[in-house]
Every structure is written in structure tokens, then in C-alpha cells.
Image 1 (cartoon, rainbow, N blue to C red):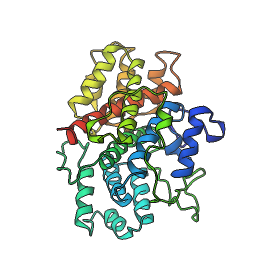
Image 2: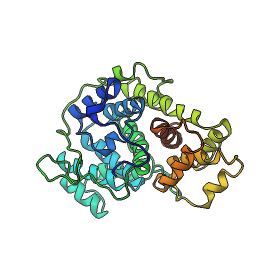
Image 3: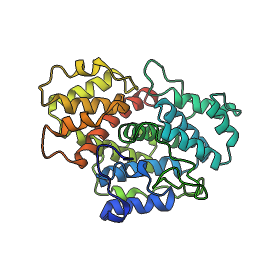
Length: 329
């Protein structure tokens, strides 16, 4: 099973907003592999996540190669094989095979400026590591970094360990049934094309670092939509999730007895959901089927839709800490 904890909605069964998201992703990015479909039980999260990715990473003026380097660094910070392999492939498709080869060998990149970008992104969101100073400024860099931290946490929680996407080249044998095929990378895209998808979504104030760009609207929509996942927990449990993730500044941790200790003051029914939220933000690879089932067993109304919302709440709570740590003054 390529997607854990939920049953995804395939493109042929999608309707309304979800169908619109799938159509845009298919036209501008890739076919619907597992990393695209994993949040499909929530059309709202799919729309907001796709919007932030597309407006940050695919559209705009900054060279796509630069943003692929930032995304690769964030994927390495999250130790996520799926995205590491994906961005090495994208680097090669964008004309940077020597960059991808050096990164794959763990060597410094031959371009010092790009190596600085990679080292900066790789230093963010990592436990025990102070982020390096940002070598650049710009909404496209920051949006790419923050989206990658968000989606890598979701992917680490929902995709099987060790899964990689293959070459993503339409001329190659797919790595597995349903493996994604990448559309032509690097082609110019008009900013703002995803904003109509956000029209019915909740959103707060766009961040100042987005400088009035569509990236700010997308980030605000994703933050506000993911925050709704807190409503699946009791106020006390939601507070514990926020406080624990904040105490670690959103940085990735190894799961251990500290997780159980952090929720020990909650009731027996509150603890499973708090554990899922904390792990989604800090150690998503440790989120097992049994842990998710234990939470869902506390309320028969909890669904696949609820599951992706709780994961998004934990992941985005961590991303907000990284935003404050890395970007905000």
C-alpha cells in the first residue's frame, strides 16, 4: 500500500475543488503519484498545499534551479528519501547533472552560491542545529523552503519508508504502478493561477516576507486550513501539541519516551490524538498505523478527512516555528 492511514481519492473519482486541483497539477507539474494523492481526502488542504507549491516553486522570477536546490536542502533536513530522489531528478532535468551528482555524493556543489543555498536549507528545522544565515531573501525561496518542510512531514507520515519516485521521466520504466511522471520542468508560469482555488478557504493575514505576492495568500490559506485540525483535539490536547512542538522550535526529533511523557497530563482519550499531532510535527516517520487507529478509535466520527487534517495541524505548527526561526526578524 503506497499511502498509509487513509484511502486516497483517485483523479477519476474527484469532483469539484479536488478535481480542479488534480487538473492543474496534471497540466503543470506531474501525474498523480502517491505524494500528490496522499492529502486527497481533504480538497481544502490539497488546494492550499498545491497553491503554495506552485506559486513558490514553479512560478515567479527566481531560476527554477535555485528553488530546486532549496527544496533538496529541506528534503535532506527531513531525511525523506522520496523527496531527495525527486529533487535530484529535477536538478538533472533542469540541466544541473553535475550539481545533482555532487549532492548525491555528499560533496560541496561546484557553484559556491548554490552550495550556500543548499547548506542554508539543509540546516533548517533540524534538532540540535542552528540554521545558517539565509544567503538570499525572497518569497519564492522562503515559500519553497516552508512548503517542503510541510509536505515532507506529511509524506514521512503517510508514505511507506524508503519509497522513491523513480526517474519521473516518461521515457523510463516506472518504479511502481502509479509512479509519477514529471511535466516539463522550468517552463515559465504566470503567478497567481491557483488563487481562484482558495476563494472559499479560510485565510489569515499573508506574511510580510511574501511582499504581497500570491505566495503570501497561499501560505495564509494553508496555515488557516491546517489550523482547523486543532478542533479534532480537546483544547488541552491541542495546547500540548502546540507547546511541545514550540519547545522544540519545530525541529525534527527522534521519537522516544519523551512523547509519552509530554502527554502524560492528559486523559486516556486525549492522549492518542496529541501523540499523532506531536509526531506529525516533529517525528512523522514514527507515526504507525496502530497510533493512528488508537486515535480514531476514540471517536467513531473520525474519518480519513479528519486524519489528514490532524497531520496537517501538527506539520504546520512545526512549519510556523521554522518560519519564526529562519525568516521572521
